[in-house]
Length: 126
Image (cartoon, rainbow, N blue to C red; front, top):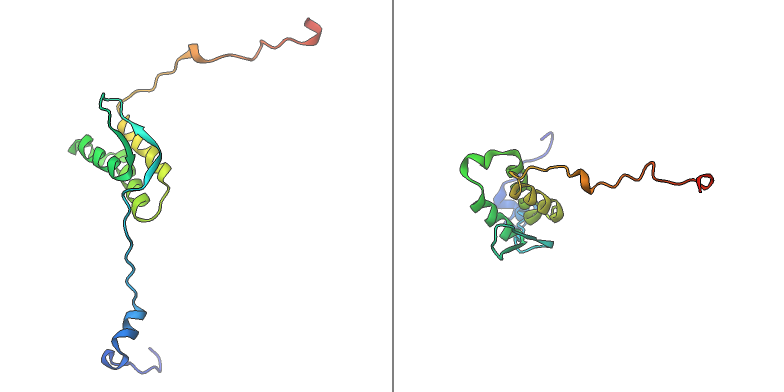
């Protein structure tokens, strides 16, 4: 502090100090609902509708050795960001779905693919 006089906190007053160092506290809302609830396929009739439901389910679902997996950490971080810092809830939902389905292997089904090229008829071919 060049050339300024250091003031005693007692002389400044408590209100002035509190206004300088504002402590901001937020209400954490774990009750934010997903746009579309996550329906579990394990036979239970439970659907994960809120951030609280999702984080509780992940805490019960994930074994300790898998707790350090990148997908698990990402999902828990996105759920926390959505609850505490108004992060994107849909990203948290997608990450939760990826963790729930982490052992499901995606298989390409060629019978579902319609090949539309080469099927077009030209006017001259009619």
